[in-house]
Amino acid sequence: MATTKQRMLALSGDEAVAYAVKQVDVDVVAAYPITPQTIIVERFSEYVHNGEVDTEFVCVESEHSALTACLAAAATGARTFTASASAGLALMHEILYVTSGCRAPVVMAVTNRALSAPINIHCDHADSMVERDAGWIQIYAENSQEAYDSLLQGFRIAEHPDILLPTMIMLDAFVLSHTLENVKVLTDKAVRKFVGTREIALVRSHKEAVVPFKLDPENPLTMGPLALYDYYFEHKRQQEEAMRRALKLVKRIHDEYAEISGRRYGNGLIDPYRMEDAEIATICVGSTAGTTKTIVDKLRADGVKAGLLRLRTYRPSPKQDIIKALKSVEAVAVMDRSHSFGAYGGPIFHEIRHILYDSETRPQVVDYIYGLGGRDMPPHLIHQIYKDLEEILDTKRVKNPVQFIGVRE
Image (cartoon, rainbow, N blue to C red; front, top):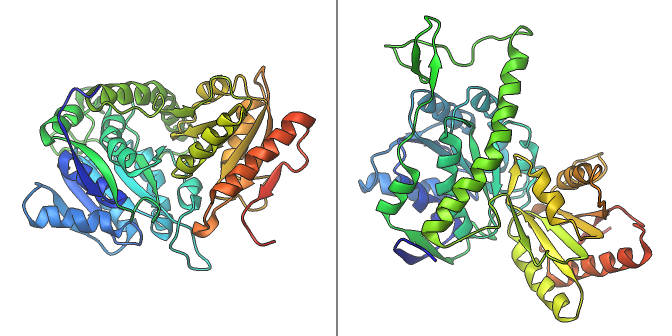
């Protein structure tokens, strides 16, 4: 049960993100337009123009500059936000690593879009999957409601003094970004109370004084200095430790938000659906989970013990939660809406198979590459995946571990 008043708005996914950022009333937004993310910053610019927020809105000449501006603002202690997609996210690539390495808690919405060439503006997850090792926390939304809710949680996660890692919230291009949906929103007061003000961590300066970890002429310090083999390794190790601490924090903040909103997404890391006694299951991220649930329900009605495991938090990787969720499953199909060219399957498949290698109960695993460039994933194809899993369950053998589904061969 929700403990705070809410109201229903008809919003697209992009508008839901923009509304969440408005309610947080961030200090700085720097962005460059790219389809299908443009609506997020376009709508937010209207809030700025109308005086609904007290935000410094910075129009820049590229996405590389947008993230650089957010990084610089975050380094001074500001709460910052940006949004991007596809080629824009790729152009940020260098600064993604700089931002996480400087421990700047920037929050970014990524409207997942295919990478060119050929030019394509529709959904797949190649853009954010490319950045899975950039040191950013990654959360994938199933619907626009979750995109709104996750944005609010994202600021709490990124800015926590024990974490200080930038955070991406992903939503599928057009399927969510441009589709109208009923979205329940909290009151501005409830949002401000939940998110709070940014707490600045304390560090020891070169003068052995304890000072706030931000750029301040009164307490000078350096962020992102030259660090060769004498210290670079230690910096990277600290980022890994922060990622590991984030596993518990994501769960805790998710639970705190659930108390006031009444909405839960599994435990914040994974969102299992009818997995308690499942013998076969699929694993995916993003909006495809919604369609897959209807197939699971139909199979259950026919007596098939089918389930779905949606990965909500992809970074940090919730290894133990995945193993526990798959404890009764004998055959698993991973659904990858991106591909790692020349590798053995897609990125989620790589991860799941690796995680299960040392598991006491190791199910058969098969990968399905689907939906690249926005190609539809209709119910009959998802149903076919479960039929294949039933065959694997009977034969105890995977004939073709990596398959492309819904493509003209």
